[in-house]
Image (cartoon, rainbow, N blue to C red):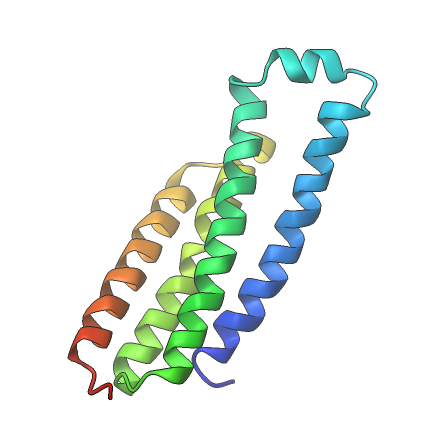
Length: 135
């Protein structure tokens, strides 16, 4: 699959998953039997981490759609397109890592790796666009 296209597809699918996840959070806040406890713990522990994962999942999904579109439309070098594409995809490890932390007790290494990857992808893309011959 062409670089850029895979980011758009993965980003849209990731967005759909994290939107559904958000609907789950709405259920927990408004309809679950223990909703009062969920609301009371709004800014702490698992509840906070769950919301953090939801927000970052949707943001990183959108960033992948944007990155993919720019890779497809702007004349950046094939090497930059490849690395930016893969780094942006790796960035989605951050929200997945947040979920893995509170749901499975996983190490925060995935959160850090995803954060570094997405920042590197966006920075590299900015430099590649700066250097591109855009008319």
